[in-house]
Image 1 (tube, rainbow, N blue to C red):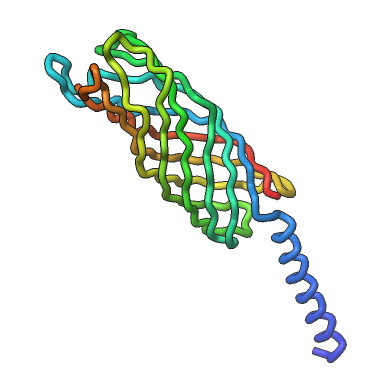
Image 2 (tube, rainbow, N blue to C red):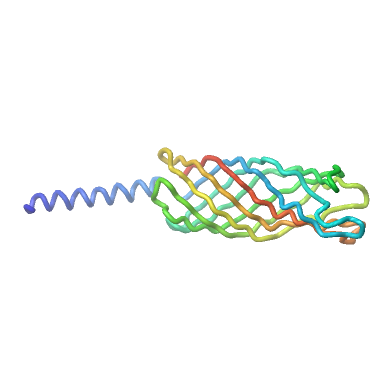
Length: 204
């Protein structure tokens, strides 16, 4: 290979490396996503007196969520998942007995396996803090006001244009609530939902 050709090849490789670095930098450290999420509860509850186990259930539903992700490095990031308070119907042996609202922000730490690829899979683990409000159950029944539990996730982004991605994501959250009467715990409902989501993301 001639000296001139070697110089041209070296220059081309250097230009390609610079362009690749610039393309990655142009994406920025933030990604925001909008998803439609199916909330699939475990439908488990402890027995209490004449009430058998698993008699207390909560409706499953689609909800919107928005999440903001920050990339500390190409591979490591953190994601905060938010929605507005969601209303759920409570059933006892299949009969509607009331409702409550919950606000379930979730924070995860994520590992991104192929950060520069078109297909970008990831896994994550973190914590969920759920706030329970607007409890409307037969008096004197009430629910505990907060739930803290671990959260796990897996999913992927697919790059479809500059800065734009489509996303599929699944999360599992440990979430429970105590059912109380006049301050005394009667039983515990184990909601432990799977969250199955799909949406779009923008990296900036």
